[in-house]
Image 1: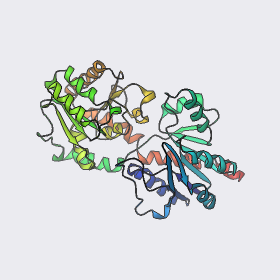
Image 2: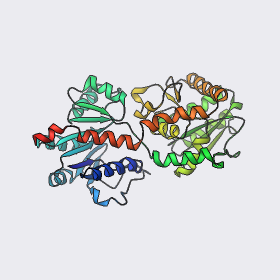
Image 3: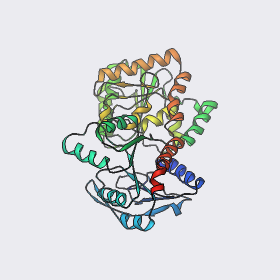
Image 4: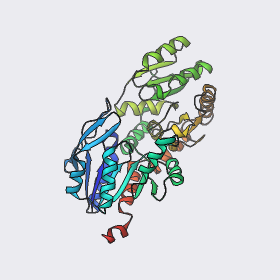
Length: 382
């Protein structure tokens, strides 16, 4: 079989699942090509450079008109390469994906989409257009069950499978075991406060992340019980620093700046008691859970990222009522008491379980490859 995977660009965090897909294609005697531009329109986003797999890459040129994308050279290359299956990123604002998926489906190619599917917040024309787009493939592969269940109600005859999402769990697991079995897991008194429950936020400091809610919740609680590490940089940093100053919480809140070194991040997350992400939690949920740290985020699932499904309420994290500071404060205090009562060891096991079983690149690649290969009758007809 010849397989094509079409993206706008491949972010560095996709490396583990892409490597697994290449591995599986070689094991099965198949050929796989990854087609994308090597330039991102997102500032500071590191891309995967496919070291060692250059023969699996084909570059096309992305032409952006605001949020809409046309991939120059995509259709002509796909026509020349003539894959059996084409996997497109399921972004309905990618105009070339509309044309290419319809064109190659008519030509008898098997079409798969890989993406968010729906969020549940769509209305009006946007909902209509997205639902039409989601009917184009033979199979739509979603990042989670929430989107899959919504699509089953809305998207007609398309087959919908959940393939979940993943980070570099193999590397993270190695770091976790080192932290769990050596002196490397010792808290630094300069960073952590051994007399307080240590909270952490990791991500870009933007308004959609609602980091101010963590600071306001600490202000409502007994601030002597809490220490907050904010790891990241972004346009909201000055406003957050001012808020900390206004509440007199300078001794409780430390701005760590942007950190991209996974060794440093693993140590910070592992030694934190609770990860709090009041906005859309995204990949931060899986990043915290793999190091055994419970996650608190909001309960507005129609505006959440699909990774919220890795959180099991009151088992490895909690959901607070969206934008409700009192509710957030209540969940933070609940977990502080839970940790004091039960310790961290059992909590770490519950946190890591969904990552090791479901949200990892080996499982994700296996599920994707199953969908690539699933419809044997499709190829027999050819």
